[in-house]
Image (cartoon, rainbow, N blue to C red; front, side):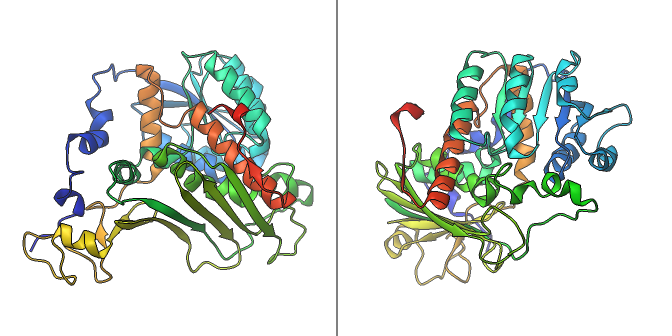
Length: 399
């Protein structure tokens, strides 16, 4: 008996979904072009992205890497070619005419200024999530980027490029889950989220995530991925947001919450989204559940399971969890794999998209408009958490 994913038995098994996985490979473009890039911000995320870029030498050439901390530049040497230049001032990177595109992986508070200056310098931009620190910055940056249509501007929400998450979006769009009314998301860990600091004067620069001046906290650093996916998959955004949070576990001088819960009401979609994160318990870890009248999906970052409701099981030919040779194979808990194999880390797909967008001129799936939408949602979550007041989506956000 051969394992079959439910997609192969469903109406979703068709050219629309399958072609999406191969759309990049099928573009007829000049693939001889190599993009000269620079990384601005060489912390953990910056070095992680550089390690993927380094594995794509036929697409990207790392010309320079930039960070204000000397030890970060030293750590980054093993992720870049020997010819790459170490630079401490981002403006010097932007002034370099040989650099085509920049990656921005700095603390959140610096995203806006560097991204704005990069666009004005004529660079293609890949900025890590969350796009900006606040709503005003997001709106200003969106307006600026839209005035430079020849520049590619991509935001680091990798789920928009993952074959797994793309397929789940198609399940939602085609009604495979029925009427979705609830979304439950968590991203938990058990630890203080601190980095080692050898010089006390560098505390705020190294542990910037702990301080409101630089950081959007757990909502920006973790939950924004899931918030963005819901915006994308349902082609909507929340109409109102409430939230609570506190510094409940680590009384260590931090300013951002280590324990949060936000509830997002999507009025037009008739749906409630629950988004939470804690630094005090890792049992659930990453949890992403989308619940509909015909079934639900439970997602990890690289794999997912579909759980049909009883009536849906009958439609699919599943009876009491027992399948025949030509039936869909289910797990012991009654779930059906969405894909037959694990997907790659989402950064791989996102960087492929960035390259393709530059050489073809097409709009990336995660662009300045969608990045603005997600940034507004994150800022609203934080405002609800810190002020205790319900936040309402405003018409002037214009998404």
